[in-house]
Image 1: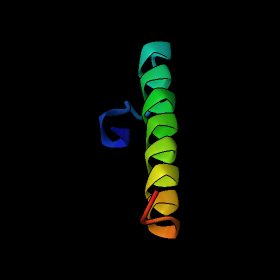
Image 2: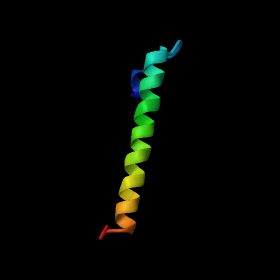
Image 3: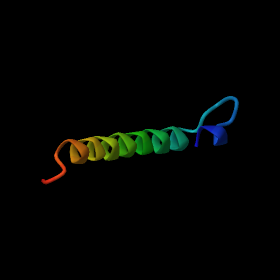
Length: 41
């Protein structure tokens, strides 16, 4: 995603998409960590 960013003048929609993806990644990583800590849940 970051490779698609222009060298200047980042479009707000691209920045929002990056933020959304980062939030989703963080949520998935948290779920994965929790599953590893509590494998029988």
